Image (cartoon, rainbow, N blue to C red):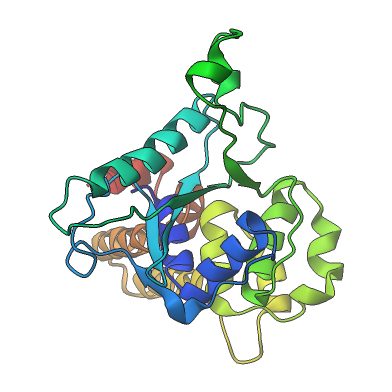
Amino acid sequence: MNPYDLCLKEVFSNKQHFADLFSSVYFKKDLLLDPDKLSLYDKETHHDLGFRKENDLLMFYDNMFFLHLEFQRKKDPYMPVRILNYKYAGIHQQIKTNTKLHLLYPVYSLTLYMGESKWEHRKTLYECIHKNDWNKDEIPDYEMKLFDINSDPIDFMCLYLQKFFRIIQYVYQKKWENLYTDSLLENVEEDIFYHANVFVNLNQEFIQNHTKEGVISMCKALEEYAQECITKGEQRGYSKGLTNKAYEIAQNMLSKGCQHNFIADMTGLSLDTVLKLSKH
């Protein structure tokens, strides 16, 4: 997985966050999912129902249905076909198991689009195929469920998700003043800054002004650590040691999902060097 998907998987492996996203977006709050009834899909505990590895995140709810969350950052004109494939592959694979199921579990899929501009591509199956009067007789149309961070309202029960999505949305839309005037962002948890910074480079002044008292953001901590190493290196004259330490910090920041430009700025390494490190 890329850093963006890994970040989102970390956020939505939290069952409260996952339940709130599906309750608010997929079920439009007509069905409020109980996080305690969610379980992360696992082949051993769920009798290997045959779901493919391509699924980004899959939860089983109360022994009734599967919830499939797909992460998407780039626009894909054939996304409805991909989602439909995941859904029906998951249903079809169930009949290949030896669990002797009398009824198959349905799969509800939601695409979480986190790109920097609005989703303006196809959302239905019929938009992906040539128009034909026989289409409706041969195969029904399908419209995928999509949450677009750029245009859909950030209306969640969970404050964590509201803060996380709003920060990214404001930066994408260049609504800088909203970052400072939105009362919801007066105090923000450290891990929200960490996760949001995977998608956008947050201004350090904003982080300092909005972080909860006594909490320092991961990126700020890395920045101070880098500066400390640089200072020590200059005092001792260990240019080689300083370079090695910069590599160490860069590797650490890459493992945390920080953006390449941000890492280059913090460590003093060239962008090309950081890109090479990311491939190892």
